[in-house]
Length: 157
Image (cartoon, rainbow, N blue to C red):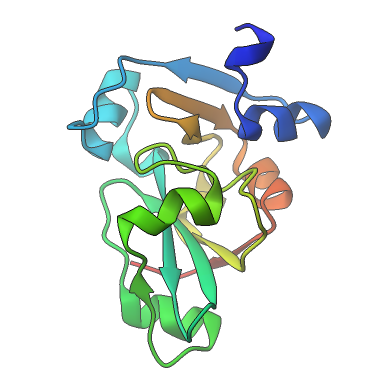
């Protein structure tokens, strides 16, 4: 992978000397998270998606959950101490995070937001998250992900 192919996520991981393995696949926006897990030859419970929500105006939260699960908005709101949270409009994702839909990584966003990961990650030996571009996943130890992305664990699904 050339220097210009590196994503913000990869640059952050490398600058912090965190071992990871990039996995490239054909970028296809119609693929679901479960399709991507299948392409990687992994269980969907090990492949996580990154979701960005908003609570009170201008209060954003990031949730990282298994691709085969759905974010429970009540549990998510409870985890962050809000009455309610909702998904941000897709058009707001790039200006807010620097990442596009389908390529949003919990690592290396433009700004830091309070971020949470589903508690199931703690029981895994490795985890896959978007490496910051559609068609690219990063495989790393959950503890490293939690540390570098400053994630708290919570029951979110």
